[in-house]
Length: 88
Length: 140
Image (cartoon, rainbow over all chains, first blue to last red; front, side, top):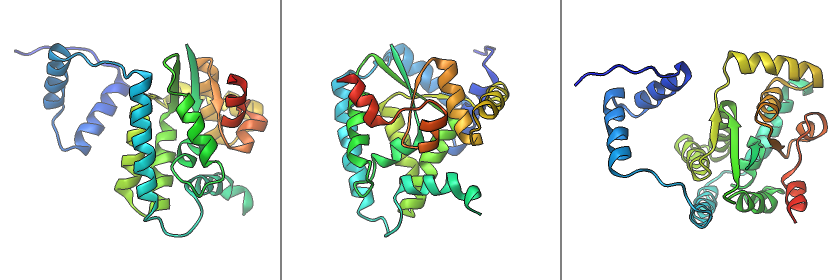
């Protein structure tokens, strides 16, 4: 069936951009989200789950940083970016 | 419910053990997993984090993946930097003599009644931010 809904402009722009990035149609994503919501409502992560996922992210970052070339850290890169105009 | 607006400097410092704020940033993120804490950022922060990590790693997909994953873990509320926000940021930024990007962070924190958390000296000295270290001290 066809239906019409109103969506906030900024939200729809994000949906379109993310769909395009993943090479998927907005219609396809919409149906998927409806199905997930109806069949398996999302649960908020408990603090324990968040901690476990965060620990996994720390390990992922540690692994990724092993391949980082020498140079300023990512925070120092941001610091440099933020001060770049003032220095010149 | 406590709302924290977390600056890009904190997210990226937690990713890298070579960074002098690495351990405190990780301690802060661990503490921010408490259920009564909501984390928010302006859209701009997502861009800063992903790009800084990609530049650091010389790896675009790793930068995007690390950024996307950590924001997802915290179910971070990513706020649109729309025209109304930018107009407010003009007032906040000019009033406090902030850089444009800092004004966006400060505006979001003000609007959400949130604490702004940052390692950026200027955000701390001019925009009312506190460091993760200070926040952790305040919690104990």
